[in-house]
Length: 328
Image (tube, rainbow, N blue to C red):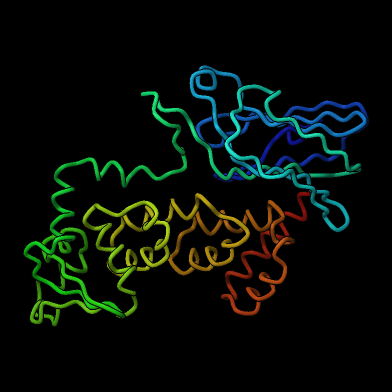
């Protein structure tokens, strides 16, 4: 048996175990795979029915901080028309050992099949005995809000304290501070250092952003953006980061967009990754579509993508399709 028979392929929240063949009365356990901060295992046992188990690897981390998992698990037949059988969504299940989640799949499976786990959330207990918190939540916002200096900086924006520049978005205006904008963006700094319209009229026109997105953009620059607002405006923030050369915002958006790729957003993210030259996001989207077989689940959307997307990007996707077919 080759090592590949036990290997589980993963993205940040998705795990797939491809099983070539499982004879009757057979037990198989996967190699460990990492999701979040835990190592995990899948195991299958075939008797009268197929038993699938998901559990974390036993360690000090598991004993002291066992994961509280929300996930969807599926078994997908990889022959014929790729029939999929899904367990009802698991919500906030405490997992400590290999008996905490057992799924009896009573539908007979023959030949190749795939076990797929999509982690919707992973929580861990706080060392201070507080409520469990999600490890997927982006902690950069809370850390900034805890700093008194940044709280004061945020008040300058929210209370309009001595603003000296007006930003005109597509549907509204908001006051800001030249010094803060210049410190955060070399493009803004250049505007204020030369005799440009922005310096003379004390205004910046940003017609390609709504006032709501512009407010989120300024909140990020001032260190007071809330996590849910960041998630809501990620693509607009990515555009602003590229336009105004704000590398930390670009990197933050990039990492966040990698974190929750799914069938509803993968094609949009693939095109944005190509547009903004985000190689890691682009390859993650392509692998999600090709390596994990999601291209079959969104055929109509993918056909629309083929009609409208950049030709070079389509060629990259089909190159990965050919490579995958050769290796399977």
